[in-house]
Length: 269
Image (tube, rainbow, N blue to C red):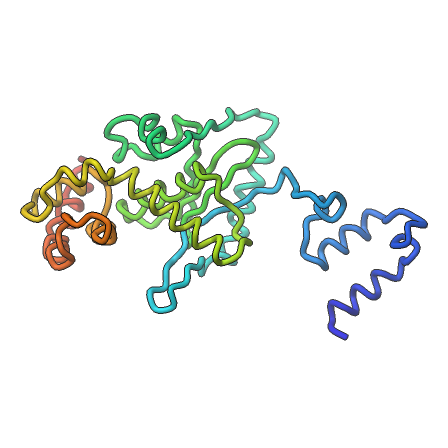
């Protein structure tokens, strides 16, 4: 008999409760829920706990296996639980409820023009909080007390942070969540969140209107600074937009982009 089976066998010595001859004690229910790895609300009612916080995350993609994962999920868990707990403790303050937009077009409309530079500030104006935690392995998002929250690490990489904000915003708008979902569901959610981020930061209509094949390195640097994405992000979309510059063109021009962005950051532009 396995260790868990032995524990259950010992716990289920209260057969009278199982047969309906007496009620379960609160401690018995808590222990049983713990052993079965289920929420006690679900154990009692058979329904998901409405107060559960479902967390979505930006996954890493393994090009060899084709799998998506969050390698730092376990180490990040306590930090995320601490953030959730702080929001629950703030519940009596009655923070304004987040009213999420319906789609990417409505999202861009609410963010307003030229939102990339003040991205986090514009999100907070929409009652979507942006929390930064040192040491976090990736970006996460969730809703607690009807307040949407995006949690970022302190990567120091502006382009990556922009994409993470747009990606997690996609998870929120599309009502994704729950890292315990099956791999297939998580993969689908990641693809949808990436598509949302791409359309938000690199609108297809605007991209198609540009002559990317003849663009110079300085022009490319300027364009991507405005879009707030890296050359790598642009290259990932080449299969969708055939008039994008080639990978080799992006590689050569990437140095100009990095140098330009570093100069801008240093100057505070």
